[in-house]
Image 1 (cartoon, rainbow, N blue to C red):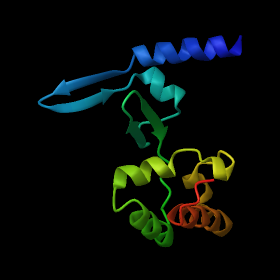
Image 2 (image 1 turned 90 degrees about the vertical axis):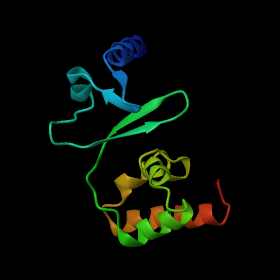
Image 3 (image 1 turned 45 degrees about the vertical axis):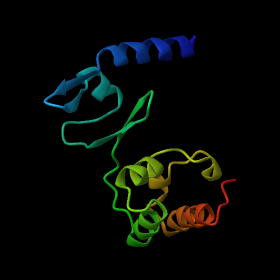
Length: 126
């Protein structure tokens, strides 16, 4: 029953979100209902990650990325800001489903994220 409610809510929220093309630029128009559902307030930032068949909307954390993490990510993703943002805000299996940016509040969390980046650089994707 709960899954049916979630599906119904998602469908309603999707219908109230529009993408408009104006002068060769795409604009994403989010409904007040969607912003409320995502708990995005007037001054909050959010991130939209577009894939071929979908778009993911995330509330921005406003956290500063420690310089050593930022440097490692710039190297790993060849200075591709979109790839870095997507990586930081997407749950990772090696982190037991945690989102890397949420771990950056503590030295231990930073070490865990940096260790994962190093593993990826070495080709360890497990």
